[in-house]
Figure 1: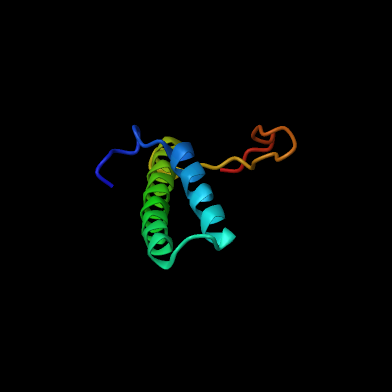
Figure 2 (figure 1 turned 90 degrees about the horizontal axis):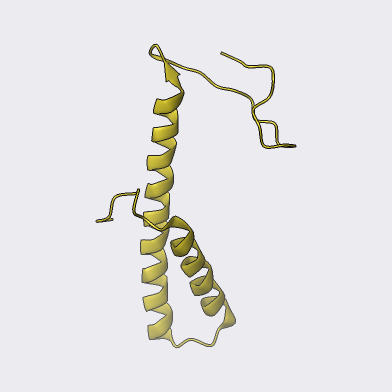
Length: 87
């Protein structure tokens, strides 16, 4: 991926990937068109995976305090960290 992840349009790439999958699953594409779509899908998947990995590393750096990684349990109900912090 030649772009840095800050300018990478993750949501747009993911939507494009979903569209490609739907087209390929329809079975209406020629073999050549399917191969091109598959190649494009692989590129999009790799770019999205790199953006996710880069974001995960940034989050990990933000959570590090004094050389140790701190975590907070995630409360799936309200999307906020739980009151009981684990360090």
